[in-house]
View 1 (spheres, helix red, strand yellow):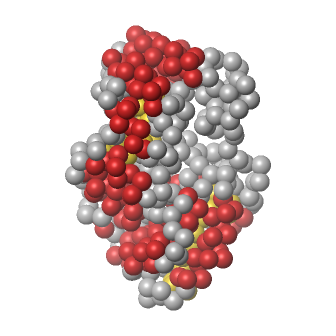
View 2 (spheres, helix red, strand yellow):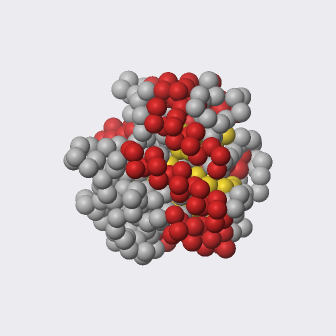
Length: 396
């Protein structure tokens, strides 16, 4: 069996996605992968079309690990978000093919299910603590058990309830002192209104210095958050030692990492409790399962990144890996634009607090290429730049 064609499809059903379709010389046998990098979609598409796709023609699609090593190490200029996202798209498509050949879901190829579903959390962000509490109650009624809580600091303007994009905490200038006062107050209000049962996550989004992050971790410890996510910037990971020493608050990091070596010191020194890597940005399932294996040895759990700026294909991959690994923690879930259902089939489904996938062969997903063509790339889609009150750039 050989790869005969690699197609790269850029579509925007509500937002931009980069998709990879690998076709084989077996009639009707193909695999879909997701290579979406929010705000840099066309860079990844060009890397795939012009550099990586030509290298795949004629290769055996079943040799997934060899192909991964060939594309990661053989390119010489290895790593980085663009190349690792491109590699992830290829890797997911190859695992999809392998599952179809075997007639098995990907989680079965990874060792079989270790659980019946992946515990999921919903974003319950709001303009203030009261709105967050109301959103958590609504999510509880829908079956969720874990919730993310974000808010504007201080609340400054309303945002449309119909929007699918998370605008809270990103819609106004950021200042650290008001933020450091507001987040513990938010937790106190939520615990007072909702009690101890709801598991609550807060995402710092890399905005604080190590000292500030330690201060925040200590201030929220008594409210027992599920975890505090990305408290500092990822460039100097050793600074997490300072944060870790400040409290017993569980910590999560990894959204901006691109491969296992970036995670390694945080795992081996047990500086985090959850690894938050994105399967679409770390080279796919092949790399995700290796990171999970390393983390398992150090009692660190996996909590794969899962926002709507990765396609349903990656969300399915998330759940397949979640189902198979022993050290799964929690899975971020997303609300997609309504148009996504026109293009994608087989996304994970939610049931009583858990995300699940079908037992269909491969990843269980497919793409309607005709429908995708009706949603051309939208160049206006781009990540915003967060700024401080004095106009200087702040980490988003």
